[in-house]
Length: 310
Image (cartoon, rainbow, N blue to C red; front, top):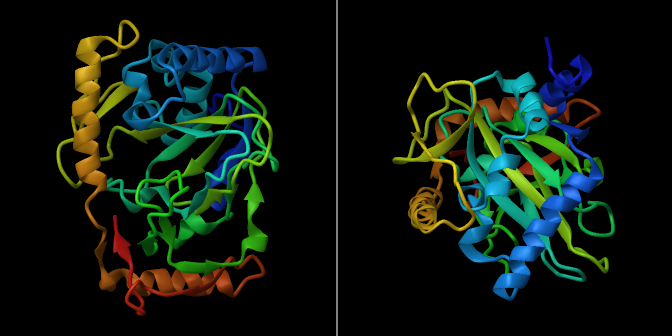
């Protein structure tokens, strides 16, 4: 029996690749997380940056609590079962009147996970809407499997290396995921998504929590994750400790080492696997033959039909 999601929401995730919005906490509780972040920024003299935006739950106790929030875990449990790891976390902060954006991409491109059983819970600390660059998704695009990406290294792209999909999409099919503070969206690891700049007069703050069931493996080296619910019967990931106090020196050292290791995993170029093109082409034709088509063409980075295995 589902804990928080309705059957209709579970079906929507399977068919469209996302569910939104889901209320998991009050607006006041969400503001408390924003207050904690901005307190730290005041104490350190500027916006949170660099490696502290990634795997942040290993150095901030309040984020370690958030990745274990019962209602967030209940929603993920409804999709992937009770044995869950938090693989990583990422802040997506767009300052007011900022050119920062996120290109159209699939999360799975550089993650190196053995299978696409992964979901992002995007937690809104502030409103996310048309004015401040809310995330947009292409419904059903997760069924395209892994598709080619190209690296742009665009200056204002919030993604490392600036990856963007090497396909043309009918962006009129995009759905914007408006959220209020304390709400989350859930999206599949292969759902095509992105977001425009923040043109408003306030920050847009989102915290992305990446959850995987414990049976998922890392294909490209040793890796670690935090066990947040249930038990790990597989041992594919080194289990990370929970911080006991903010910015603990031992946890900071561990955090740096883990981020360096993760950077090596995600820095590996995706490998073309031409043998899987036929399956992608078949799925593409199926989508294009219906009224809900979102893909208009697919071109590999060398001008041919290529698919990346990541």
